[in-house]
Image (cartoon, rainbow, N blue to C red; front, side, top):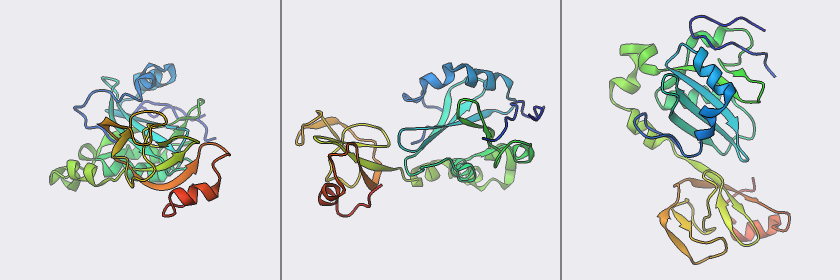
Length: 229
């Protein structure tokens, strides 16, 4: 095991939809900051932010935590990832004006600046691109942060059960005919029952069965335009 880098504190370990910074804590991540492993990392890091990535039932979630307040500053869900992609994760952070601390890329036991934790999560010290690049930071210099967040399209897999369907990005009920999760089904089996609450807006890029009874043939009949996931 390598020793901690004093520049950003968090020790390296052996390799084995988006929020704005002024928004409240993401509803899907309150347990993350209560986790002892994450709390210890927050206490040890000397960078303004700490990124923690963990696997979801479908895809991966990257959460950037404010190391002082312990609240999420950014949440990125990648429903299309079937495995962890450290280099791509760094690129996704840059799209939202954050970046893995440059020194972390050269520390032993890290891949593209990310270290694997005993829990199976991945973590990296993070700064804003403005903090690292200063005047060279085009993202902040030209006020493009909001534009980039809007341009980063959220995608999801349409998951079909016997009597319902749901969006993989937010795990809520949806309608199989919709190309995006713009509507939220009001009841578990109410095909025509639409909730007043809107969906998460993710675009469906593939379709998957939730149970074996829903065969590939059924999926193709439901959405012939979507590939099987």
